[in-house]
Each structure stands twice: as C-alpha cells, then as structure tokens.
Length: 418
Length: 174
Image 1 (spheres, each protein chain N blue to C red):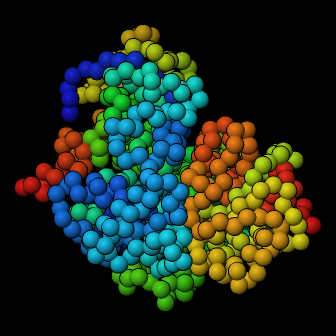
Image 2: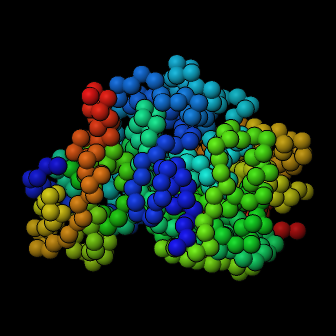
Image 3: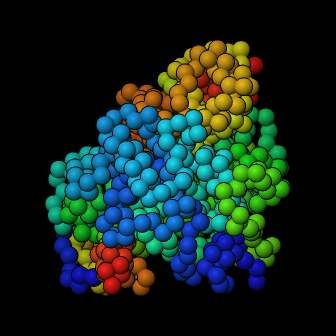
C-alpha cells in the first residue's frame, strides 16, 4: 500500500514510518510569524526558557499593518523587532523594500521548500505547499511552544486527492478553479485533511497559480494543501533555497485517500464567492450588472507578477469606474511590475497603488469600506466585516474578473472586455 | 478535568461560524485576553448583545466547523475569559480546536447538533446540563439530549495541565 504526501513528509520528519491518524511529534523546519510575533514573544517569555531553540529557524515578516497605522501596531512591530534582535535572529523582514506579504516572502525568498515541515502563526501558511512543503497554520500559544522546544505534534491527516485535467478557457483562471472546488465541497469539506492537487493541468500551471490554489486550502478546512515538486519547483528554488535539507517528496500512485475528486478546467467559467462565505459560489452571470463601489487587486492569494500582468492586460486603454486599489504582493513584485510598465497601466486607468502588505484584506487600513458598500476583491476571505465594516459586502474573484468589474463599475465578465 | 456537571443557558449559533464573527479583526491588536470578552460575537447578526448579556456558565452551542478562518487565539480567549465554560459544536475547524486545547479550554464534538439546531431542538436561552466526563448534554428546557465525544488522550494531557504553556512550564521546571 502506497503513501500519501502527508504520510511521507511527516514520516520523514518524525524519523519513522507513519500512516494517517498516527500522532507524531517532530521538529519544524521553519516557523513563520508576522506582526503577531510580538504577542507570541510575550507568551514565549512565560514558559521560562530564555532562548528560542534555533534562531535561524524563525522568520518574522511585518505585513499585516505596515507602515504602522496606529500606536498599537507600532508597539507590536517594535516588540517583534526587539525580540528578533535579542534572540539573534537572521530572518527578519521589517518595513523595507525587502519585504511584502509574509506568504509571498516565504515563497519568493526560498524558505518554502519541497518535503520540509513548515508552520506559521497565520492560517494561510498552507500556501507553501505550492512548492511542495508540508505547511500549516497554527495559533500563537502553539508557536511560542515551538520556539521554546523545537517540537510540534500533529495527527497525520487523511488526504483528499483532487485531479485536474484540461485547459482554462479565456478569462478563467486558478482562482475560478479553487472557488469552484470550495463551493462544491464547502467550508468544512476538507476539515483536518491534507489536500493534494494532481494531474496534467496542475503540472501545466505556473507556480503563481499553484500558490493561489494552495493558499485557499484553509478555506475548505484543510490542514495543508500541496502540489507536486516538479521541474518548475526545482528550477525556482535552485538559487534561493534557504536550506539544503529539502527533498522532493510526492504521493505514491497507490496511496489511499479518504476522498477523491476530479475537475476539468474546460468546464469552468469566471465566478465569484458571494458574501459572507467563501463557499458561496456563483458564476459571474448570476451577479453581472450589479453595482460595486471598490475593487481590490492584492493579497497573498492573487498579487504576484503573473496576476498583475493579467489584470493590467484587461485594464490597458480603459479607465476604472470605481476606486481601485492595487497592492503588489511584495516590493520585488512591485519593482518588476514597474519595469514592465504595469504600474503605468494601473495609474493610467485611474487605480491607486499602495505599499506591499496585507492592505485592506482584513480591514486594517488602505481601503476600509463604508456601510452598504460592495467590494470585488482578489483576496481569500469575504467574511462579514472582514474589510472593516459589518454592513459592507465582499465578493471574491480572479484578477481579470476584478479588473473587468473595476472598468464597468458593476460585476462584469472578463471575457466580454474589448 | 473537572468532573462536575455544568449548568447554564444556551447561546445558539449556525454552521461555519468564522473567527471574524467570533472576534473581529478590528480588535486584533489587543493582546490582553481579559479585555477580549467585550468584543465577542459583535459581528454576528442577532448576537450583538452577547458580550453584554452573557453570564458566566452560559454555553456557546453551534453547528459544523465552528471557528473556521483565521488562526487568532482571541476567538478562544474572548469566550474562555468571558466565563463560557465549554463550546459545544458538531465539529470544530482545525486551528480553533488546537487553540482551545492549547489553552486548556474544553470543546465538545457533538453528533447531530447541526441538525438539532436547525430543527429547533436547542434554541437561545434553553437551560442545559453538560457532563464533561461523559459528554452528555441534557436540554432541561426541551427535555432532549445530545452526546459529545470526550477529547483524546494526548489532548487530555495538555488540557489537564491547564494548556500548552503551563504544561511546558511544568516540564521546564523539572
């Protein structure tokens, strides 16, 4: 009987053979925290251990509210900064042109690597599976404990295999696929499971597209989500891997799955997730023509250079009809977009650009909605009040659907933009 | 774990209660757990008064996938510190469950609760008796009962110590 990815990766880290539902305690390879490093540091100090187990395994990336928009945020950043220094940490990404959204930095800078165990004090940590890592989000107390002991326990998850074939039609993208999957299996459809993406269509996807898929694994309840560590991944990490202890692990063909699903990309259409749940799927036709007040192109889900290129191609030669906020996922992406002239395209269209970071995604700043307003967003959550106001409405969509809607001032089908 | 039977009123919620509904993003910069109960369920339609009206001993009762979304532990603290002794739900989102265990906060997986809520077998204000040792939940108002699964051994060890941090502290002290 073959093994799933989770059984292989957790077994390798534990040092013995494991199967789904076994409980293992193991050493994580990298531990990521963002602005919440500060409260975690406070909890860490209560344990009674002076030093973190291995300072080089910790990565802090300020992103949730940068530059600090309030005194509370400023204090958080200050405490995280001081703790990193005191512990002799080498991986600290402050408010600087090296930074960006934490999950983007973890992938872009070579922390996310095939077969390693990664934990983060943020639920979207599952994104690193796009590069073949076993990666999952945890809470703050648990992170403090991991810093102190270098250990974390997991129940080896059962796995959900999603096989994807076919090709996207024009105007359809990875975001439409993941919103369709979540709409089908619902917000708890993959609770506690390891989600594996298989098939020729996944292999044909860019790493950016795979990141969009894995990023949203948590929105169906998954523990982690992962794509095969193929030649594209190995090429990507070649010169930037922050560790040489990785290994390209993948599921056996005869692995045992709790559930299997298959999708043909050719069946998909542009879509949205309607308020106030990510599994509230609707084809674009259902909402087409309804007014919007704001468009947001950003977040860890969909603000990589590939996403910006696609959105810019739609926006070129047009003016946006509503306020449109563009936030590249990192300063490296920002600079690349600048070189390619994409920033000019956004500015010519009437968009505003903000500094890389989480921006308005979870309602901190840079685009809070007013009561009754509707926002179309490339982010990953549309929970009630997520963007700051409980009487506002968030619809999730792909970069091209967001761009097309921004031009029209109403929900619009990206296939119809001329 | 406390062996005694708990009694209190039910506050009933639907399926997929996300962490923004339990404890909104807006208050994430708050780091003192004792100050978190005042924001509990502020964004949940119809439960805006929860924070003001909840009494110590009242139960939070919910359907499937309670606590889905963000990894914020505030969503555990705001109930624990608010005096809610246990959350009863058909199922919990993974990170919420771990956060609860790691803070020594009991949660019970209760079969049939989602449908029971939909059918009105538990409604707001019902008087419940919860036996944490056996997992039996008796609705004294409606004369119905449900059964919850006790936590597994590994989790119980952490719970018994009062949570992950006290558990580690004790180990470090040895």
